[in-house]
Image (tube, rainbow, N blue to C red):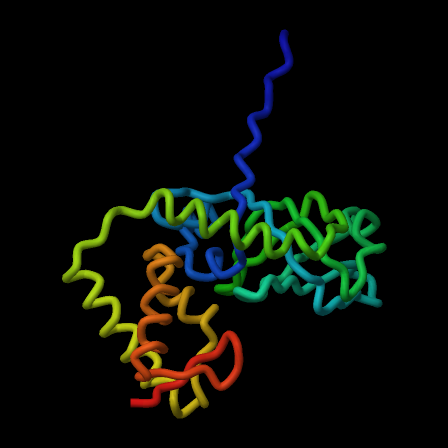
Length: 208
């Protein structure tokens, strides 16, 4: 009898912020996939920095790694026999992670299949790559919609004043369904009009 071929799910190239805004779909109390736009995501390909590592010391063996790519943070969790594959991964490394999404206690995390060290420059390349893909698939936006986006963007910045402003990465996450180039364009326009200002690069505040 011929051996049945196993079809592996596509490992989507994403940023962590995309995963965090996705909707976990649970089927019969088990995580089925992450719904993001029209995609049903099971496996991911992420580039980020290892910012924390915790390894258990008791009988139950596991390693928890925290991955950060500038758009958010997500846990990588390995258990049992998988530990040996990731023992050499250390805090401070830039890595490419290919793995399967899991969800437990309302937390979405990655069960890594591969973690390989990467040149830090690929973090920026991945950001540009995903932004380009979003721009290519984004539907054309009417003038009225642009005005609504600008109003909502301004409202978001205003409401962030009690926190001393808002990071532009967080703004992009809030408007994830819209092309980043459009959001960046409207941020630039508000800066030029003197309605908002940058206390430092990558952060904006309301000026009025």
